Amino acid sequence: MDCILWIGSSALCQYKATNILSQSSIEKNPAFYNLSAGSIEQVLAYTDNLLAIVIEDWNQTTNYAALRCPPMIFPLPKGQKSHAAEFAVILKMDDDGDTVVYSPVPLPHLENQ
Image (cartoon, rainbow, N blue to C red; front, side, top):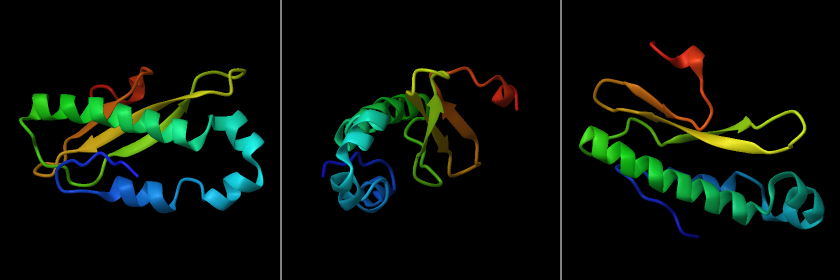
């Protein structure tokens, strides 16, 4: 399994290997998982690509600042009828705890805090 490695963590590899959806549950009902999320391989490839872009921007804007914890990825629903989601990423700076949210969807409740 390919993994994006960033400063101080390989936790995403561990998460992908053990957590998202077990292979046995996918094999029991592949039609459901492929319909609801695309194949798990597609979702993981998408989040890997997203993380690569986010980490590149993080490194450029923070001069390779260390992260306090692994990046946190979460889905945001696209709409009531689309059954699709976008993904956002949260990064937390190690030295002072500043938190940055990379989101394709505006999150006005998080602005200016």
